[in-house]
Image (cartoon, one colour):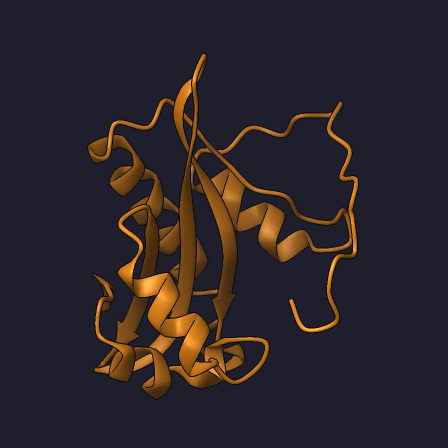
Length: 140
């Protein structure tokens, strides 16, 4: 059974370090967790961290607040069990409770697992979207 929890303790982040692309940085972890519009959910299977999703609330004067699904990751040993769908769905539900009018994510066409998880959780593909990027710093 998958147990999804909202994380506020840095120790939980460090215990789930394998779910992130790189080791969580202490300064970034503390900053992320203390921001009220930043959300980290972890999925546990039998008490073991199996997946994570992060979301950031974005507010604009003429639009209101939306949730940006920043990153989703599922440990390879736990893939294809619905954990990604459960995490994306839990973040969408959190967004509803926070009063967000919508939630969005960017992914590559070459990532069918992510597309499957997001659409299974209720997302609808937007064909006209393009990502444009500014490289501002070496270490983000």
